[in-house]
Amino acid sequence: MASVMEATNANTLEQELAPYLGQRPLHEVFAEFDREGYVIFERVLGAAAVQRQIDALELWLGKDVRGRNNFEGADSNRIYAMLAKDPVFAELVAHRLQLAFGERELGRSMLLYACLAINLLPGETAQPWHFDDSHCGLARPRAPLSMSTFWSLTDTTEENGATEIIPGSHLWGDERPDGASGPEDFLTGKVDKIDGAGDTGQAIKATMPAGSLMIAKGTLWHRGGANRSHARRLIVTPQFSVGWARPLEQQLLAVPPEKAAKLPERVQGLLGYSIHEPFMGYVDGMHPKRVLKNLEAATVRRRLGSRC
Image (cartoon, rainbow, N blue to C red; front, top):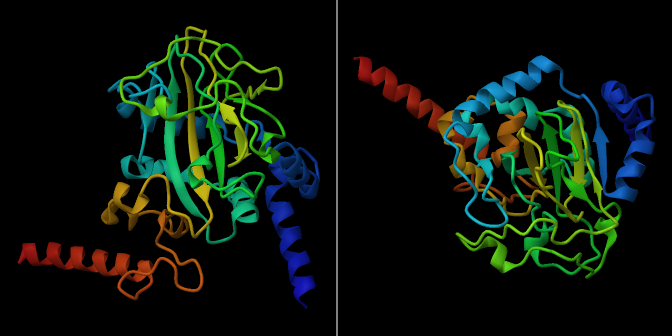
């Protein structure tokens, strides 16, 4: 019975994702992801959906807050805690294609580990090489503890700083490319403007038209490219972790409960209003969803009381 149910679920998932697969069977796309460490889907979002994301970001990008260190980049804007800024960003976080890969890679109890927009401005130099779950400190090779996704809101080209990746590097052991990130890259005010450091013949540039999606394993070596054009390169990167790992950005604080209560239930779970079995993530012995509902109910009572 279980095998019949599994086959039915797999067929349903394949049909649901068919518009994005380019007539390829899903198992082939998963195999490519496992072999190369990344996969790209072009034009997942239509022009209107892309514009909604850009419009919501413009207020924050207009503040032109630049990176604080070499890793963030002196000529880049980074917008953090996106779901606290506008609920429209939940459209990206909850996209079914992205979630299908995440749930296969990390399990149903996965969490939203970080969610930020990165705006590479003209003149930005190449970022240090890194992989996104390096902070866990566990020896490689190993299974990834996270998965990163990259939504292109503008065309990403070789000239404007398309993400550079080293295919297959998710399987590496302790190898490190020249120009790999180190503690000095995260020092406030330390910005290295030497362009081209760490170039490697193994790397490719993940060029994508606007509306495309790249999904990468947390152990894949990559970096933001140098922007040698006269236009910005804007992406949004939701990142997910296994359910038992601490998020890179503490989503329960970054997104206030009153705003989280208005988000889709699945997004609430990704923020951390969920349980990794058997009981990891409880609050005062309760499921965090109950806490969120209690907070929402208390807010309603206060509002009603203030009208009396």
